[in-house]
Every structure is written in C-alpha cells, then in structure tokens.
Length: 159
Picture (cartoon, rainbow, N blue to C red):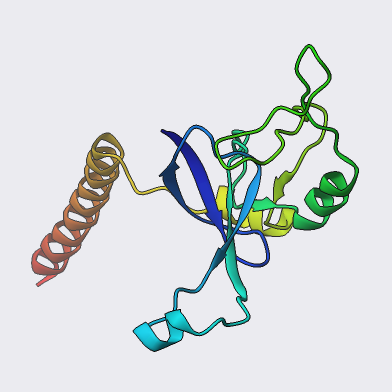
C-alpha cells in the first residue's frame, strides 16, 4: 500500500488515503449510485474528484494539483517497455507510463497575500512571556499605588 491524495475537481487537496502499490498517476473518483436499481442501470458517470498517486512536495500551504498540466502531459506521455519492446502493463492491463521527474504538477493554491496573512498570525504568549508581562504590570501597579498613597499622606498632612 502507498499514499495517494484525494483532490476536488479544481485539484485542491482534500485528504490522503491508502491505495495499492499498482495505482499510479491520476484516477477519477465517481459518485457511487445510492440505490440498487441505479447500479443496474448504466448511468453517465460524472467525476466528483480525483485520486492522485504523485507525492505532494513539502512546503506548500494549500496544495493544488494542476489538472490541466496533467492532461497535456498525459496526452503526450510515453510508456515503459520491456527488453523486447513490448508495453509493460500494470495489474489492470493498462500500460505503465514512464516517470515524469521534471514536470511539476503540484502548485501552491494560496496567493502570496494569503500566505503572508498566515505567516503574520499572532502567536499565543508562552508561559515565560506571560510571567514577564505580569511582573511588569505588577511593578507598574505598585508604583501607582505608592504615588496614590503619597498623595493621600500629603493631603492628610495639610490639614
């Protein structure tokens, strides 16, 4: 088993799932008919997403699989052949494509502004920061209290 990524129709990451080792590239996911009668009747299947067996590179905030690049690559791809020149087939009798190391299918799904907004989210105070802030607040309150006490004593001495 290996990990594949479920993506929506726009290519945005939904969740990972385990697939057989024989699964590769991109496979459409179709909505399953709910009723038994619907299963017996041949329906036009409409994809609701895709299963992508191409790893997501690290460092993406919101991974997006570029389905258009994939479609153009798929139309021009070559397939693995054995030593006799015959196409090599997978477990489903489908030809196995050659690897595509130079093509980047995963892209960043967020704009630069959205990434900056994520990076600038204020971080919660650590315990050490809270203690330091509370000590400063305490010292400021003690100074105000001393000043108020001094003013009261001054007013009492005036009488």
